Image (tube, rainbow, N blue to C red; front, side):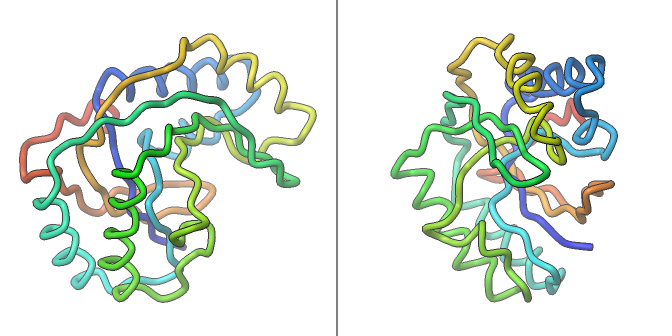
Length: 187
């Protein structure tokens, strides 16, 4: 079992991602995200272990320091591992990179076994559409995802701590950015 901190985005974009997950499941290409209980998100960091009390205190303070901020999904991409991941790519901005770097300074001291892909300088901001795909299903997944018109404008609105595995995602805590209320249509 691992633990992730995820950045959630506004309801219209969240609903579009849920729609793509549905199309992928209906076409029997992948139901990995939908059936595992994930909420559409960008992972900011994943670790093998965390000190929950410390992370909660740190993220409560961190989330209050940031108002919701703009995000743009502008591309489709693939992590071409043996079990590929297809994703929506986020336009990288100075603000987003700084937000992630500041997040890492808060998150890393509260964890053990931080995954390398999420470290500053290695992180690729993305929203997973499907994972665990054999390479021969990747073109079909991309064709389905192309039904959505890009770019998609949204806002990062909240952080969440989740317990994750390939088979499931369980929300542990939610932290609205700026301390405000957050709508949770996917929960």
